[in-house]
Length: 395
Image (cartoon, rainbow, N blue to C red; front, side, top):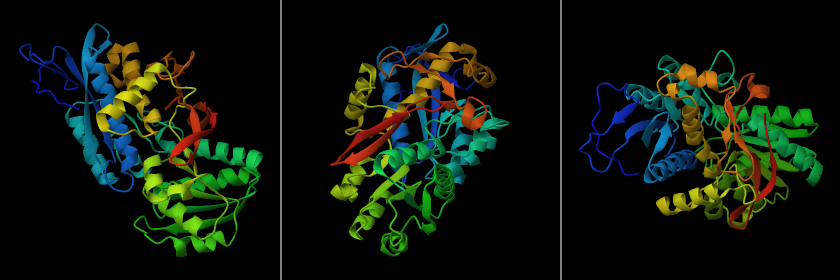
């Protein structure tokens, strides 16, 4: 996204930067929205999708005249920080946002990072929208984090139940990287599977994230002959390696994960061996997608030369922030006003057909509304692309 040179006006509270009147290319004050997340390494696809979604949408807004909040129309600037999936860097990124006076930040993308930045966010009046699942981030007394997607403990039970009822799945095995995020997701998955009546035949095998040969890791699991193999919290880089190894070892059962994946990475790393792989998709399907969603995909693709299905979900965070600020203009500088407005907030959903609304949910999972409402779209990979398996919702 092309950056404009700007002059900070001393009267603004650092969140807003106003271009000088002599700057021909910019007539609107600037509203900065932050992004702190992983855009390098094995999990890079998650954060790249975030950053690109925000930049594509911001460029679109600015091109069409800006975004009006109260009596002022702003250009939107995305300030990004790659935390490299390192909690310490995530803290540094959130501190950078605080130093720039930014009150609204998207990310981080993983549990450790989202938990690590909480003290910084709360101390500096920052609302942040992580793609991480620990319930304590979104449950009282916490109040500054808003879950930006469907959590694994919401999607996992829906996937398992669907496969039990439609595919006759009776036994399940879990494998996870030896890191806190995937281990936590495995724990939730095992609990959900048992509650549904599935027989868990393996739930203690782990691997290192830099593993290149998964044969010795998978062999003991596959001896149990599970109907379903769950790759808990698997990164987009590790998923095709695990799938390929399982299929080459002769595994004929189903493979799934509760994390979002990249069809291009699956095609490159596993090819047709990935056919039938089940994952959580973006919050849209051709049937759900509005003309605005279709235009967003076109603009994103033109801007970056490719599209990631996960951006169907990632496009929402910026929209929620801006629409909530539009409904409560004083929240630009007052995070408490933003929080107070969340229970009753509602706005038309521009990315879905019909009368769908942008609202905050999460009462069932967190006891308060600290999650954005996006559809749970579950995909199955087939011949280089994702196909919709089913659609559900959470409250």
